[in-house]
Amino acid sequence: MRSSASASPAPATALVVTRGDVHKGRPGKLGKIQTYTVVRQATGEWKVAAFQNTKHKALMEAISFRAQPATKPASRPAA
Image (cartoon, rainbow, N blue to C red; front, side, top):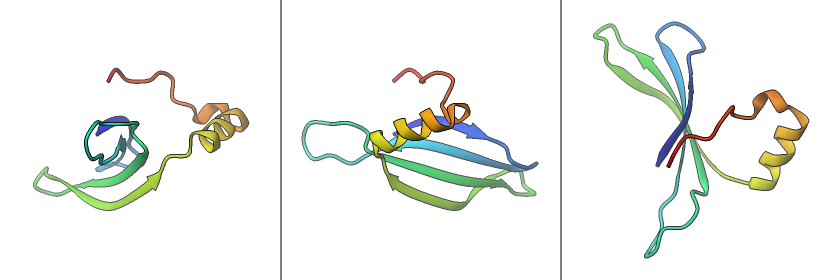
């Protein structure tokens, strides 16, 4: 799993987007995108408040980035 983006929509909350997958045998492409909404507790500890797992569709992603260039990540993190 690789973390590719994070944002803070409000104080004490964060959105974390990762890519990952499960493979038998030889690893392949990271075909799923996981989005976590995390919230900082009064103790300072972060807890997951929501989770979404989505199959990655490269064609739809390319169309989306072309239609809305501002949504495309500035650069890809190193593997």
